[in-house]
Length: 462
Image: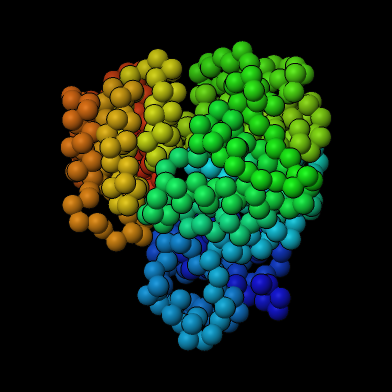
């Protein structure tokens, strides 16, 4: 795919997945250019490194590229994409190019509906502590490397998959990690059965001698385990909190922004570990990373040290600040009902009044999961809902933020509000927030700006 290629152009380079892949390829010596409707810190970082970055889409941006990479959000009518076709420049989806890089290396791929970014980052942290210097392609900004990707000198490439367009089925990893499996991306797959079949195929795409690591507590993955057919050179390692798992978490304690437990691997007590991440869901994320490390025979002392010093990920229960009146502001990427429930449950444990601000992500997801969204916010004391963040989607008739608000209000009743602008939200927070509150912004769009603007207002007024 990259034979004879010198210059690569990314259409939609501002996305976390696209920018991360572009950065790795730039570090490998390729000339990189890219465009997006909005520029952001990720594109600014690429520009500072020497990539040619353009705001907006225009045929001239293609330049002398001899390979064009597209994100799943790019329309077939995009002027740069059309120009590439006129010039007969090869066009590949991001997932295909990522699969090409991981398949020719020793790939560790993390797949699942939730927890991919944290699990991937923890694996990278452990491998780095063990001096394996992996190449990393992460779906979030990992504080330990100051970004979302890094070209390493070691043999391992650690990446998270993208199930949204089925491109993860192109991957043939040495190690696959399945975090969980739920109904999502049904706009692409069309049915629950098809997404399960896709995960089954991915699980069986291992290289010879490969290892499949599976969360055995997840009901859907448990069902999948009975159908997976591997060769004699391949094996499965399971993790969870039930005695049947190979790697078991015992004596779990959740305290504030940290979690503690004792891992037991195939009957052997490894010793108590603390992770600087809150919530039961992060226990599972760390178990997946530990299972991967044990499969690679990494010493426990290195595993434990890496987890203890883990720096966290931007927008994963990220504490972005606190006001002088002790109002804590947290931001999280959660955009699926299950993720929202887990995050709000974790927020509740901080023993503060929880004020949640949720921005729905994509019309299709809102439509398909409307009933589940309606029951996802019970742990919030006050809930603010916003218009849908389209993420490049065409609006669906009668599907909007107000519809979601009506459905949620039916289940919650009081203290549920809908605002169409940032200014309205900020004014509400100014008027209604109290000392000791926890304000948490939720969503995969740009909702995190609300918390930062709220903090700036308090800083200016104090």
